Image: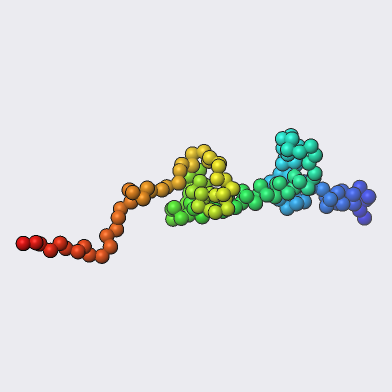
Length: 135
């Protein structure tokens, strides 16, 4: 038969765990909460505020990684790594992340490719009308 100490240990295992694990998150809720308090964004920070902020950061990171992997796979048949360039291209081509990160400079990301309209080659439309020789 189990002793009261063993029963207490089993019960404590069920109740324990980090706040990240309880919320089902990968990002550290405790660290996000301490950074919110240390940053003095508000006089008081509630416990659920740190969980919500960690969830938002985790979602944005997952979205950014997903778009970056898609951009890398479009550039090469077999993508080997994510570079800052592929992350930049993914962010700038997406409408939502593009507006969110409009004023953000990503290090080593380069610029968006664009071609001035005056420099673009002009396509010929149809046949040219020949000038009739005047006698």
